[in-house]
Image (cartoon, rainbow, N blue to C red; front, side, top):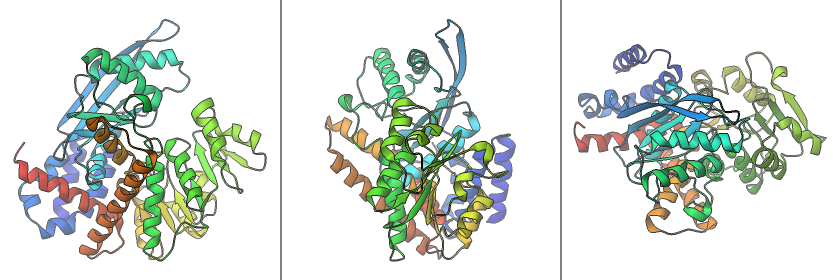
Length: 452
């Protein structure tokens, strides 16, 4: 079976040159499926892997808008509709200079299995553009979002493809895009999630990915008779995921001591001031170096001071780490440093933040807990699914009701992943458990629906 997977990956590399992160995500998932493929020959016989590796639809389009200075600006927009076996395509939109076809294929492929694990009836997709909202005026961002939606509106609706936000796409961008969607289609439906609370959004959506990651971490610890109470935690990132990971850690009686952005990281031994972090990142939209002006006992370490080939935030001693920024931010040397410094759990809040070598190291340590992204950070898309349900009912649920449903979904994801790892003789290996559980649900639906 290994030779079969090797052949699939070789063909995938030939067909997708230069798309390293897509190949990385595919490699991690495919090898972990070997125990299932040996047990059930239907998946190989019906070429489910070959089919699931190929997006059902890939769209690229030109996006042109006018800068404040009167200059036309040209970008490339994308939407990768990867798999709809379980329901409408669902996955975020990312606006960032790093966006390209390979990045979005990696994210969309991961999204298939993440969405499957939630138990909700949603398929997998991803999209975005190589546009950077940083440094742009509100007018420029509005014009870009409107130009982007001129093309995207042809693809989306409440029961075909329902995008959400991601890096660079928050409430402001969703609002501008939804306004354009409504104007172009003359429809007011749930075609986007992450909407404003007064016009169809869901309470707890902003908090969901961070909260869900912490809920998942606590479930992992519970298998060893432990909890987050009293734990010192390091976090990377300073966006929604990182901010609300920190907030929920405090609620669970843990103490977050780091956050980071593209300029460097903050180490606050007294505990990250979440209110100040929200002010800097959600209101003022400034760098973390401003944090120490109001918290003089904290330290700001710039990226230039990081050890070569390392992410400085992972040098801080802790009990648990929550990588919540971007892909491949936690490498083998980073995780070895965490381990030597006493860390015994990594729970991924970002998409694929750990390299394959780092994952192998963590799985090899019997006293280490590892929560893979597709399971641990599924809270965001789960709550997007809950927003879709509220839109369909023309209802609005309380924060407590949504948060309660979110916690139960994260508990379901953990239990499903953990029980699947036991079923295949690798108890506690949540990479294997979540990949097999997520894949099996999608693959069985594909078998039921025939060659489409």
